[in-house]
Length: 111
View 1 (cartoon, one colour):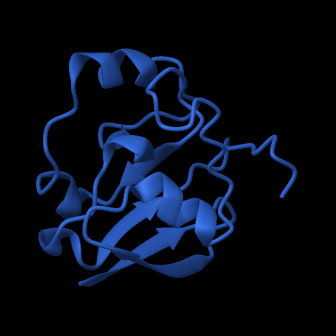
View 2 (cartoon, one colour; view 1 turned 90 degrees about the vertical axis):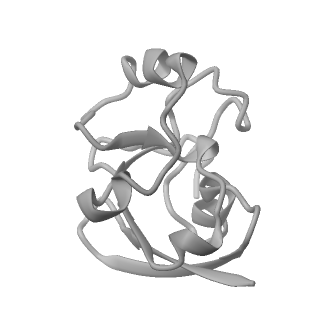
């Protein structure tokens, strides 16, 4: 099943991306050209894939692990609904998910 994800880029522009159930949000965002570096390639050893989940969607996510919460302590621009995109796997319930890539995000991959 195809899942639609609505990203807001660091400049406030909407970017709609498509993924499949089971894809993680980091890979979907990277495929859409967003500045989600993901230095650790989803191993939860950095915070370069930090996103801010829209409030109405935040409660639909599984709770963040203690390790994820610890990594978010290093992210710039953290908010109450911040998550690491590498830790969000798409499900049918997340079709239409909206997340913002913080303005403080910088992608050293050179895209």
